[in-house]
Amino acid sequence: MAEISISNKDWPRVKIKLQRKYNHLTDEQLQYTEGQEEGLISKLETLVNRDRKYVVFTLKKALVNIDNNRL
Image (cartoon, rainbow, N blue to C red; front, side, top):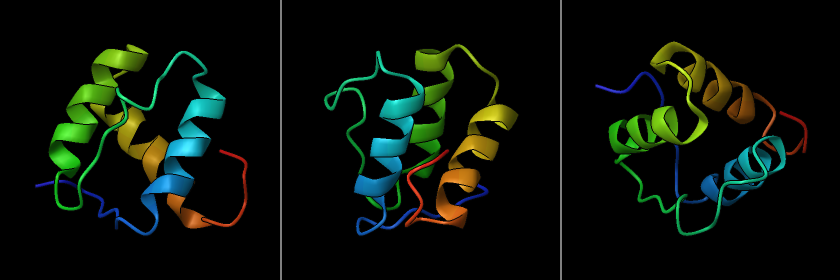
């Protein structure tokens, strides 16, 4: 089970933050449906070449202050 929960409402903001940090990520690569956090984490591990712990940390950081554009 994923350590995080990302709603469809929050995802567009999180996606923008990820694309700013990792400018090679495309909209197609960052397709996400609520409840599919495990798949998202696995995909991001590969796309950014980082381990699960780092990816989960990055996603949590993006969600902490959703209105802030910084990651």
